[in-house]
Image (cartoon, rainbow, N blue to C red; front, side):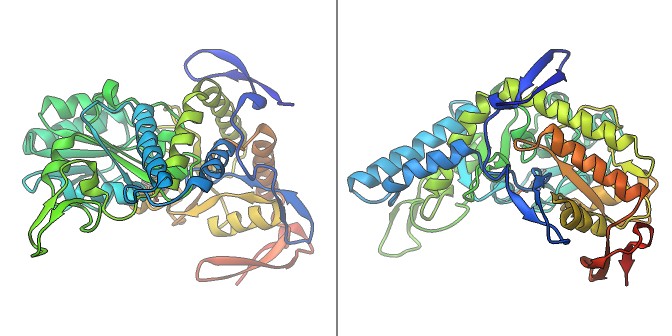
Length: 451
Ligand code: PMP
């Protein structure tokens, strides 16, 4: 039986979302051991790193596994079925992101792999433009790159991009995240696309975070390239996607050289005719299980947006409101605390090292979240300076998704409040940034770090 929560939702709609209508994920009821020897239900707040597996994905994979064999090679019946399933999955994923008919959609390992592939197919005379706020996967792969400074409001982003494109001109590729992985804030994609195209350039969206939280339609948005990972969309098994305009894919050297990417190899192996289609950049044995998993996730999420978005919105509001009531908590924000965002909240707690906080939440409360600089070091440093906590080099991040519920959000907020007001229950030691509990604290006020 699901629990109903009242929703002042996405847009201005009000709704009541039952948890029973939400797609189920594996592991949502897992119990984990605590440092005091008891067990607690695990509360997973690390969806922005990797989301749990949808039950529908596990079912699709299990149903398919008996048929599993070679894909795009082999003449047997099962090979034909695997090949058909792989290509069917590609069609489902194309529909999920609204590909144009002549776009290529290449399966990759993850977003990092997809953006590195994009960096390899960008024509040599093209400059890539990125903001320093990007995740390292969007920041680092480019050969000829102009990095724009981090902006503190949306207008600044638009103006800076317009200025850079006015200098560089049409031979540019803009790469921008749809939502930052540190604060969850959304980038103004429609405006960024319009500015980019006004200058005759192209734009790629890193949708690693966006894809599990908002519908994306490449055609409607007129975005040229899109990259994302299956594992952040509830589909493990090591798959990602790069989709977009076919001409750069066709003109570029194959991303990997090997079987599957060729039409013919002569007696002299330098005499190679490479495929001009999608296989050009998919050398090696395809990840058919990953494709099946991703297609199942796309189908499930596509039919669940109406409940998923308002439900997450309730959880996010509850989490942020709860944290805002704790004076020691500083939420990090790029464009301001009222800007629209997906379910990601990064913060520090005055007087508590973020690494210690994350460890204590895990071993004392059974709560899993991430601490660090989130593979976005320039952005995290910038946000920490801006939030008035420059002494801290890292933060903690709680990220939401399926499997999180109101009770778990309340547990997280209560735990942070208890740690802020009363202290830790254990004594901890630290070495090289890692923390371990050593003993139960005699007085909570004495608890904390032992160096
Ligand atoms: N871009 C963003 C915005 C991300 O959040 C991440 C993952 N944290 C990536 C790219 C890289 O994704 P992956 O590790 O799956 O390659």
